[in-house]
Image 1 (cartoon, rainbow, N blue to C red):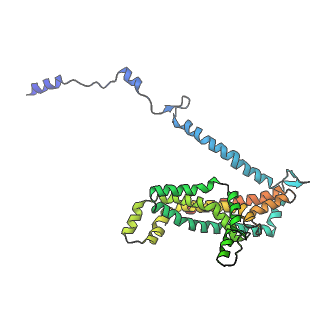
Image 2 (image 1 turned 60 degrees about the vertical axis):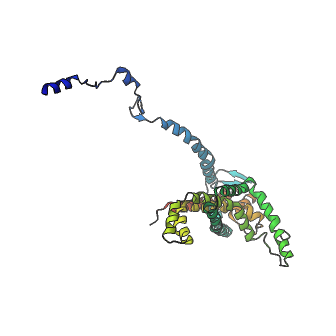
Image 3 (image 1 turned 90 degrees about the vertical axis):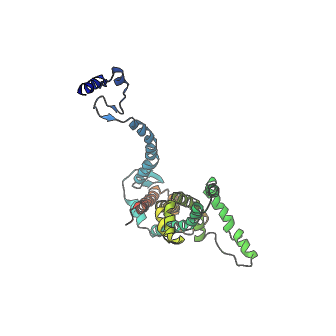
Length: 319
């Protein structure tokens, strides 16, 4: 038996552990190495850099540089209606010691906060119904209807509201047919808020809808199975799940209304001064571009502070 086992073992061919010279040449490295340093250099690094360079250059030329130049102008002076390069804090002192600036700042900030809250509250039921109640075809049609307002200019829509809200406009004509007294809506604070809603309501609804569509339906079903009602599910499940989209939508509404001048001027009648009209009036009074730049820089710093606070609140982890 021992001799037979040895014969069997001898007859079994042994596999060679060496590869042919051609096989080694066909093996390609996963990553290339730098000939100078010897470190691995991923192939995607140059490709990624080439894709990220155009947005970086765009932001540098059309965002960073204009803001820096605007900040520099705040230290210049005006002589004989012409800008003169200088380094003085007189423009900051002049603007920050004027009562009308603080009145306009408080009014603008308050109206922007109020508009963001009210418009977000109005848009949420619409976005919720489209996301959870509509069929796919009806949802696509609703998306199209929300996008259509952006096909026309915001200024044109504001002029259309002037026809509707005027003293002899459509609304007051309907009130007269119902034997009701006319209501002053144009050149009022309410008219300004209507203009803000015209500007921001479709956008806020779209942003909320995009966030609500991706809410996990299993969480909603689990909430219902555990006995939570519809309002409780919305408050405890849906809103926390879509919190980022809701906060971003409100932030966009605040940004757009904080810097808007069309609605306060054409629907509010310019009776209440906001920061955007302060900039216009400052430029018209003796070409005071440095003082107007101070107001603009103040608005930018306010928007940055509000944006950072909103982003922190949206992305913070719940306790």
